Image (cartoon, rainbow, N blue to C red; front, side, top):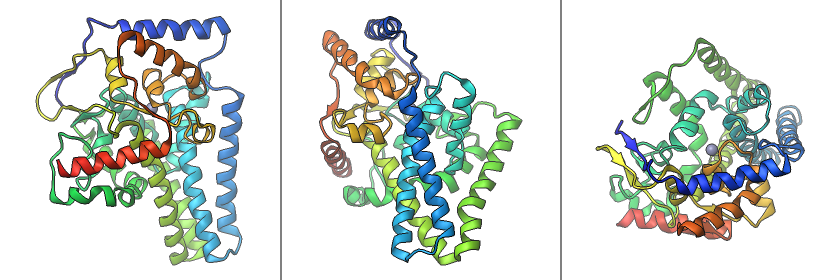
Length: 355
Ligand SMILES: [Zn+2]
């Protein structure tokens, strides 16, 4: 892995911002973790997913109604991923460690190993954001050219047209391929994994078996193979597209910056926090429905600067981030609507395919 260093001499942007954020929490005497609003949302989403799962397996439904419910299941799993799994794995869902640890396992229930996710997301993506060659979020498949420093193939000319169906394979790939690749190669792209404990090995295999039982074995036994297969694919298609689109809109849009970290050691001229602002974009932060559903992932700039603070606090923190960016002359990236960010993503994909 190339050695990546940030400017550690000038850290005044982050220290100034941190001071404001710390003062806000101290003065109001509120916790940085989630509160009743988040706990209620988590309960509602998990309960709804459980209800849809039971309905699908126990009630004789018209095939169209069944497939629609499978799509809803995929969407609910994505929202649990955004609101519960993501926060719990960052340790920001609750101030009780055991609650975060328990809820981080919602990832395993969705087919993705939480320990490997933390390595990929918390350690690599959050530190080396948009560093092409290190940040695995940019290296999903060679079918897509997601950064200006990636090899270009002829097929990429059409990627703006086919990227959305490819995103539909995201969760299937994580569940059945990427997790095992990371587990057996002991690395994520170029970064070596830290040591996995015996307990984590047991959790890895037992949750893969539990997933196969709940999402494959039991549905095949109760519904038959073809109904299972159709429903399973629809669920993953919706889950994959929802997850991928929300993550892409935050980093792979025209406003964000990329760095080449394929070969040589890389020194980033800015402090780490400024790099986070340059490589990340917010979207639709004034839309309460999108903010509620995406678990604050539309406040991605604030999340990258304060990943251990619950997303319920991001609207307040956003004001401080904007103000500090203006003070330091740093451009703050944000799209007013999700549609504007989506169009920007497609424009960038088109550009990356031809330039
Ligand atoms: Zn995160």
